[in-house]
Image (cartoon, rainbow over all chains, first blue to last red; front, side):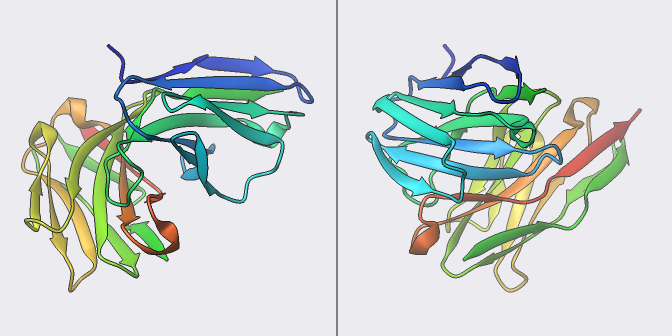
Amino acid sequence: DTAVSQTPKYLVTQMGNDKSIKCEQNLGHDTMYWYKQDSKKFLKIMFSYNNKELIINETVPNRFSPKSPDKAHLNLHINSLELGDSAVYFCASSQSGRGGETQYFGPGTRLLVL
Amino acid sequence: AQSVTQLDSHVSVSEGTPVLLRCNYSSSYSPSLFWYVQHPNKGLQLLLKYTSAATLVKGINGFEAEFKKSETSFHLTKPSAHMSDAAEYFCVVSEAHGTSYGKLTFGQGTILTVHP
């Protein structure tokens, strides 16, 4: 069974569109995260949620809106997509969100904005 | 504040020779340190983790890392490289306190190439 899963795996879309990426974890963890990996492979955290509550919100354009319907799911909605949004987006989860915990990553969603 | 610097963007070794990937960190609090590996077009897999127990940490696939507080380093080693080790490796720091609470900060990555 996949511990952290993301859909879709690949997403190709036009500038200006709105798209969503879904993430689910079956590890029973309380905290979930979204990371962005840019074209130079640099990974940076975007958001984290603990039990459906927003904990970390880095400097991210407000076109990006995370939504957590329950603690096993954290979706990422992106409005008015721009070329610079092309990247790989990784979802992750950890037990409670405390520093030092191992985070388990999904396989990534490769987004290409044309 | 926390930060990580991976000292080499590319490392190239021959199969069967030792691997050394270098990482220096900066942290205001006692850090936890991780090495993750990413194979081409794949997700991130945890190799090993340091959390203030033994300073020499053993991970999967024969990898080890040593935490040296005096040098603020957490270098990754393997005695003998295998072709399947070819991937990108990320050194990562996490703090238990402060404003970085729970946040992972990644290094820039080191691409490991293994030649036959």
